[in-house]
Length: 174
Image (cartoon, rainbow, N blue to C red):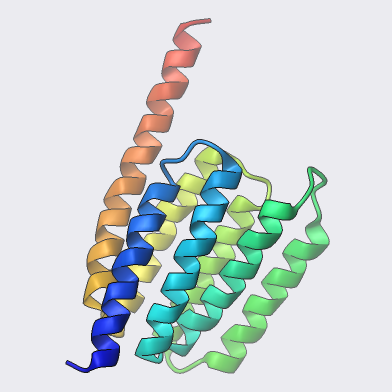
């Protein structure tokens, strides 16, 4: 194992711990700020692994989350379209094999779900997209990322379940 690989795995672990925390926070801004920090660490993780598709995706994710934090209540679909176009351009420029498209596909699905912030849709999209990330992390041999993605799948499943339980409880009190 190289020093770069070990550093990448430590960064992946730190990123994972923050992302795990993010989806269990209550406020949108708190979730997004936590995700920006997590994405910065994840970006560095993929830079150390030389996983081009992923680290470009993470740069776009940092920009995306920063815009969403600052975005006003108006639904600016022009920015959403710009991000989707950026993902498509990135698909073209970074294509190595079919697996290199998975991070970008996941990011595109995810941005559509978080743009107008439907809490349940965001959680379900994250759950679904984790499976793309899992396959990609297996392909690039990032052990910590594989383990953290499996845990994230489980965690997001329970976050969705908790959301439905909370919703059921609220409906029962009316």
